[in-house]
Image (cartoon, rainbow, N blue to C red; front, side, top):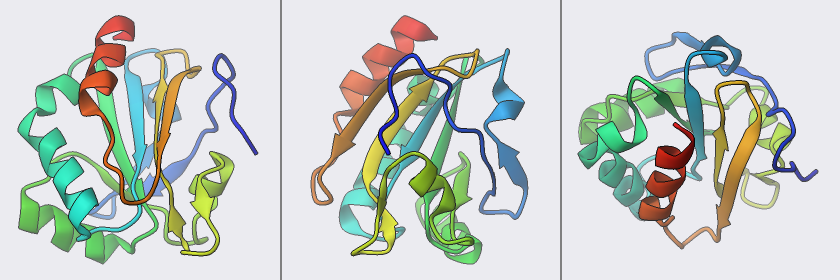
Length: 153
């Protein structure tokens, strides 16, 4: 399944690292949303990316934009990951049913049992405006993502 720019983004509700439910639809009409799928908490590339986001958080999460980082790790792993690296933005657990949201976005890796490294930017109306997919060991270009957010925020 491939999502197309200009179509509605699949809605979802997942629990964050604190067990609180977070839904994409809850931001409709108020904020654009960046949905960042990442393969594994505590892995070197994912840690580097999410710490880079943390260090420039106002660029990626503000009054106009909400950042949601999604992996197939269990909630308790995500809590430990967030506490270890000072990640204060929502880390959402797509653990069970395993990878259901990643599958709805077409980015679940069946061989590895995790989400691929992909980003989707959804506008305030819930429409997909931009996406990028990277190979597992390749970090995203966060500057490009920041430019897109600035243009649609």
